[in-house]
Image 1 (spheres, rainbow, N blue to C red):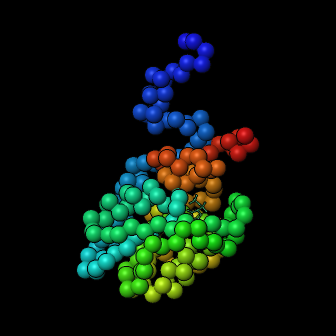
Image 2 (tube, protein in one colour):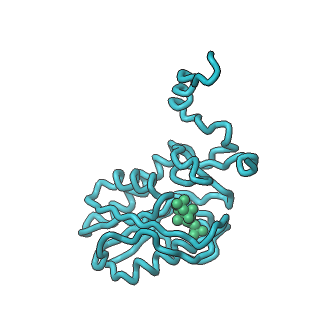
Image 3 (cartoon, rainbow, N blue to C red):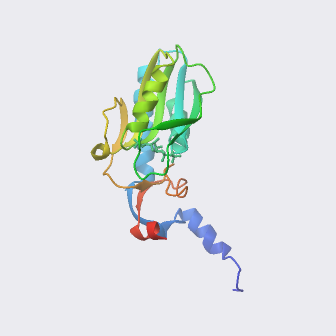
Length: 200
Ligand code: PRP
């Protein structure tokens, strides 16, 4: 093959097999199949509890929760509205500082609405703790949390989370919305990266 030519056949094969980052992955913590099953299970539980309620509003925080929000909202089978917020902890961090700045606020008034905060991961719990106070101050009819992943060993504050998908070990994970340096969000599974990836 001529220098500089991309081997499209190989690229296509990798994409079809979902292995485009395979060399960077140490091990998969939650498989694509397990995520699908869990999303369906969580959606079923939530739908049963909200079947008789009007005006369900799902709030997700960009960017990590995007994949979970998309799949969870479609699995619910109830009429819902979607809202997105963007927040930032001050400064770069490997762990949360707990200080939160709103980069994108809610687009509408949530007073009187049944709100479900859709979170990809609860790590220290600091972001969630702040968000719950923030949402509650807007006088919703109710607020509950559904989180796909939780790291019990990393939690610094107690937060009431009604629906949890998986409790996982206190390791840095990527995939299904979660990133390392903005990469790996599109992976269909949740995985731990090889240590050398961080040294690049
Ligand atoms: C992640 C995740 C949660 C938060 C959890 O977001 O989406 O919102 O961290 O951490 P905590 O429990 O320790 O507060 P991140 O700030 O990495 O932004 P991103 O979603 O854009 O990747």
